[in-house]
Length: 218
Image (cartoon, rainbow, N blue to C red; front, side, top):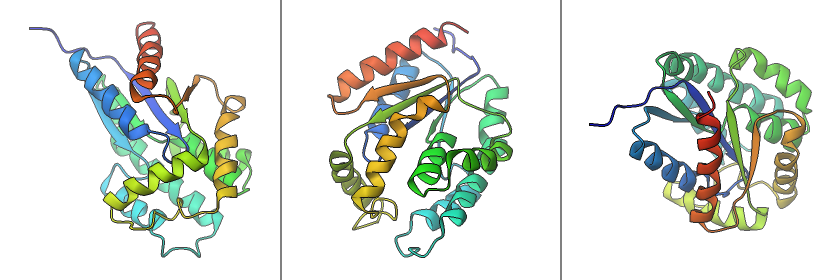
């Protein structure tokens, strides 16, 4: 029987709305199972009991009056709970941890999308993440028009018949997010940009190759 592999490693999947993160994370975790790599999967906002309550507030379309500053603090508070309750303990046990969104989403969505400035949002989150950054970050990108059409279909499955609060933002907002993610390499290292407009198989092939190269080097 093949031995389960335990190696501390932290991966974040990022991207604009409807980029295909969910599909790629599913393909990726199936690959980890095949290799018998011990992993933990979580998400943002959420991933903890407290974080999931914060998620409901953030994504509920009824909360249209939320100020950008409030939004930024809510994301950071959910993240602080997730890091301390889930991510860091799992890494200390030698697990590979995957998160569907992390701090880079705040840099882009609040720092750029909400015009709060990237440096301000970064400083706000320094305390929340306690210095914990991913070994690698996959940023999957699709044109906003394509992504929003995909995302709203998924939101219906989650109970938001007309899309969640972020998906209901104007196209100008989503264009800023798309351009912001493309520039993410200016703010952090270990960023890998993935063209999400290709077939899921082609996208995953690139993700797997990048992971194999990085995971085998530590």
